[in-house]
Image 1: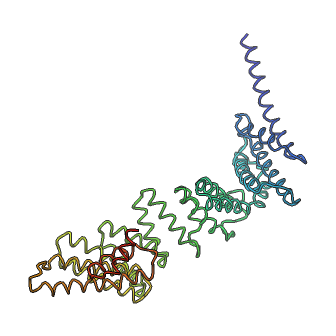
Image 2: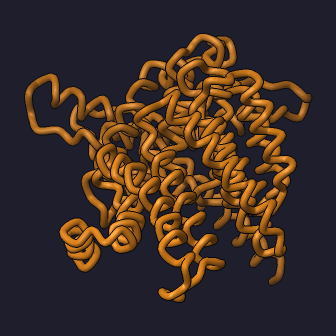
Image 3: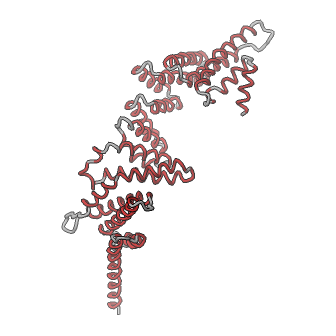
Length: 428
């Protein structure tokens, strides 16, 4: 009795396996028809893709890729005949074709029982992928633009855009197209890497940034952005040591791109590592003494040091730090007369000096020194006034640069109409 049951099980298994192989053949035949029923073909092949008896067969994945290829071709045929066609279907079919052919190639590269590899699929499938590869860019652009225009679905669309842009690069790096040497000859890859990272950044996909950003490194146009993406991903991952190291590398490779230098200085000053920050600023100034950013950063560092020195009860050193900040802000303005941030910070330093002076000045109106000290106090605000007003002139939309400062200046200089105008802006 047991033997009979065992035989029946064997027969059922063989029958089921045969059915799946038949599904693969039938799916390909349907896709090859003049008017293919792609829904039916996909249903049949999708069953085979997950069935234990056929999912590890390279031919199954080859047919799956062929169906997607045919689906794209039929849509493009409709476009050629000026019939309605689905552009997104074209792009997605090509994307799926690449995925299926990649899997087919992976399985076909497994050595047989004699240790030999007989991959009959690689050459024709590589040719198909190469012929359609440009549409991966088109698909990425389509979804990227949709993300820009639809905030509610932006994450969904950016994820798709990343998939397309990433696949364009993956194709170039795949062994199937090794002979094409696309990584060396395809000059578009750095740009596509840039857009892949932009899409990845918008959905916080740091793994994809780490994967695709290196393809743009060293490129004259996109290299600095690639390095920025890598730094941003490392910071998001919380790897401070690698983040700082990448910023340092960025400073060396791209000294004219302020992202690396600015973030490095912020890190050092934010962690009270002023010696390191000053050293970096001095190194950069030694290379480019007339660089407004580097001069501004020196002023910014002295500006920040002032607070620490004051908290440490070192008033003389704190006052000296403010004077140094003024010196470097003024130098930055001499180099770049349109440096709104330098004007704003210069105004702030004068206000800080006024604040420090006020702390020790007499408040007794009957004191003989009162009028003289009041005059000195107002002189600080008088110096701050043109600095803040220039910042406002240069960047009227950036109210954080001048609004609070002018409010304080106009109040202390008893400038009624000007103060009222600023007060209204603050209330609004």
